[in-house]
Length: 373
Ligand code: GLY
Image 1 (cartoon, rainbow, N blue to C red):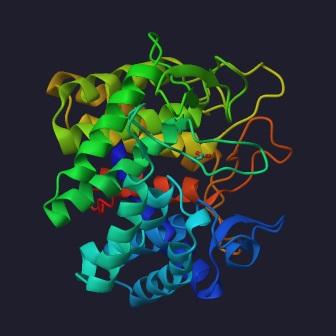
Image 2 (cartoon, rainbow, N blue to C red):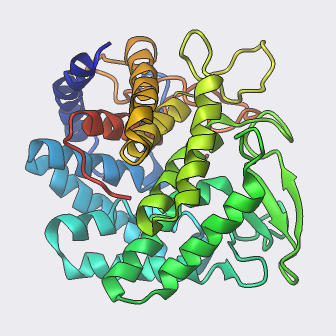
């Protein structure tokens, strides 16, 4: 599909998602049932890390259409999420995913002071997770799986914009300094020489010494989880935009070049670039996140390189639109075949963040996006 054909998908998405939002009032979706109807996370897990993406999708739709249905539903969704802010054990590095796309989005659009307040509280909690010895933001809280005070993950790069935003709003460099330090640590320890990235790294939380990496949600230790690569492209491109540190731009390009070189002939993105040939498992969300990140990266690279990244993004989006989208009006999801983790029992199903980044990327191509990062 060419650029215009991709842009022409936007009215089609608007038509479907208007029906989807009308029939899913009060719901915060993560995935669907077998019939393609959203399941409600407000019942299942109101604290789940992806619960901001529905609000983000609604704000993107409101920005695109000015249909008040989307604004009202976004505000309602944020109210449901607000209960997270008073439960310390439910706050973690994913504060960025939850509140950049909801409270901060509402503040950017409406100027509402209560929305700014919630965004700042989320940013303060995120900044409080910084480990001074290792200069990293701690990812998760302890759980049944053990003590996690030394863990940092590649996904966290997407949570740093909440800190950059808070610094600008409060005219206080502390948040920026923490985001910058974490991005530098991620650059030093998560990016391999070939441009692939690790998912999880572990430090001694007392001394800050780098200990080891872990396999995470990809195929195995030392492999190349594609959604992690996508977070890396997008996250370093954003840190470059906020800090103007050109080494972040170079790192984003390095990861992007690795990603582009590994896109299979089909254009369909596997869960892991180093997974075995069989079973061949896909993750459409990695394709959508990478596409959106590549478009952002293209804004800042040398003009001679721009089309390399834009062409790759268009190819990823076209493949999704033609092979991995459910365009039926009676189902709720757009993307099919997203995979949360390679070794999960359930794989290749609709996931809300896939739809969020698919829409965001198409809006960027049309020059009509709302920058929520
Ligand atoms: N942030 C976790 C994931 O990408 O699945």
